[in-house]
Image 1: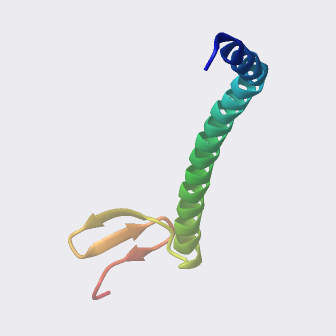
Image 2: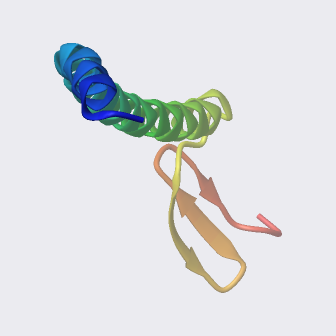
Image 3: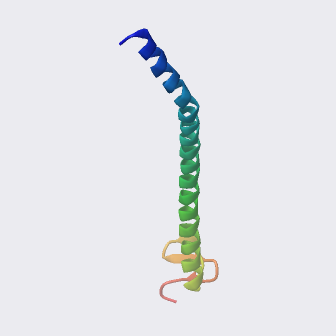
Length: 84
């Protein structure tokens, strides 16, 4: 390979450099975007599970458990005392 051929190849590669740099920047931005979307998805799933659990408590008519003392259980809207 002679020096003229090397210069030609260098010039061709230099023409692609801006496109390669731009593509790398786009790739980095896309990875950041995907990480944030994954975090948002996980937050949505967590929120959904929490709301679903609360809805289940409310549809039971008792609400959530506030305290348990021996066999008795105190709910938000209910008192459960076995044997009474």
